[in-house]
Length: 457
Image (tube, rainbow, N blue to C red; front, side, top):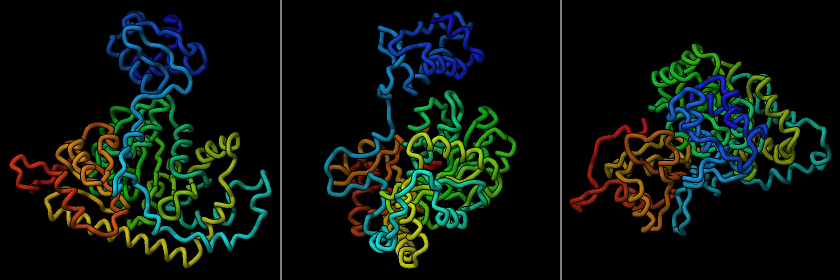
C-alpha cells in the first residue's frame, strides 16, 4: 500500500498527498476497510514531515474518505459513512419552543398565493414528454430579461443548494483551494467538505468581501473558485455594492484560474439592486438565482446562468439523473413572475421584510446590542457567549441559530443568527430578551452598552 502512495504522489504538499490518496480511494485501489500506513511511515517514504502527512489525513477525514480509530489506526471509510462535523445539523433546534427564529425560512403568509397560477396552467401537455427542452422557452426568455448580465446559457435546477451542489461537482476537485466569505452559509461549507476542498475564508465589510484580504489569499493560495452571495448575505444581510464588485473583478483579473459562483438566494425579496461580477467577468461567472424565499420553498426552483461550457457541465450531468426540473413547477414560476397580482404580492413581502428587520434592529441598537440586518430575512447579532445566549433564549421559549457553524475560521467574537423575517410584532419584548442574552453583566444590572467589536469583518 505504501508503494502505491509513494508512486502516486507528485506534489508532496499536504494538499498533493491528500489528492493522491483520495484518487486511490476513489478508483478502488484502496478498498473500504483497508488500513493505511502510519503517518510516520508515509512521511519517511515521501521525505516530508509527519505534520504534512497529518494535515493530508485530516483533509481526507473531513471529506469522509478515511476514518481514524484511535490506536487501531486509520482506515479507508466505507461508502456512505457519516462525515464528522456537519455544519447544517448544528443550525436548528431540537427543543420545542414557542418562537423558533433559528430556521432562516421565509414567512409563509408573505409568499404569493399559488391558487390562481395553478388554475391558469390547465395544460396537461407539460407532463407528456421526456425529450422536450429542460427549460420552458417562455421561462428562459423571462429569466434572461432578469439576469444581471447576458449569460451564454441558462438551465433550471431544484433550488439554490442543488445548484451549488452541481456546480461544485463540476468545478471543484479534491484538495482544490476554494474561497468563500467568512462567515458563510453552513450547507455550502458542508458541500465543499464532501468533495475534499480546502476552504479559505475572506472577511466582509458593509460592501461585501474585502478586496485587500481577497488579494492576499489568492496570492498565497491559487483557487479554482470564489463563492459569493451578492445580495442579502446569509447571515449578515450585507449586499455587494457595484463599486466593490468592480474592485473584486479587477483582483480576479490577476488570477484567471478562479471561477466565480454567485448565490443570489434572496432573489426578489432583496431590497438591494442585483449586482454581479458577470458584468465584468462574464466568461468566468456562474450566477445562481433562487426563487425559494420569494415565491415558495416547495417550488424547488433556481436558475443557473453563465458560460456555456460550465452550464453545460451541469445540464449534461443532470440528463443521467433527474433530467429536468418539473415543467409544471416551471410553468407556475413563469406565471408568478409575469402576473401583476403575484408581482405585487412579492413586492409587498419585500417591503414587509424590510420593515421587520428595521424594527427589530432599531430596538436592539437602542439596547446596546451590536447587530446587522441590511437586507434579506436574517439578523446577525454579536453575543458575549454563544452557548449562554442560546440557553438563555431557550429558557424564554426562543430559538436562534448558533453563529459557529457559519464561521470558516473563528471571528473576533461570538454571534447568533436570528430570522428577523419571521418577527411580525412584539419587537420590544423580543429585543429585551435578545439583549439580555447577548450582553452578560456580572454586576447583574442588565444590558450594558458596548462598542462594535467588528466581529464579522
